[in-house]
Image (cartoon, rainbow, N blue to C red; front, side):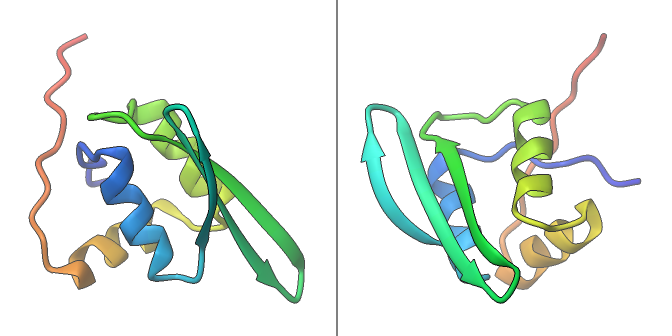
Length: 89
């Protein structure tokens, strides 16, 4: 399985806007997004950091109702190359 790329909060917001999320407000270093759908309303809080931690990114993807594969496809459609983290734990 392909690793998730290193993304900033702003880059993640741009990607989520493409699938219907809209910024509602920002307080400090967190951006709140919302999306209305037939299933109800989804809200996401995106940290406006230079790099989003992998675990945080995975949870945001889950809360957005996407699979990892769908999210990576959105990145490919965006046409931008992202680097992956090289964690050595």
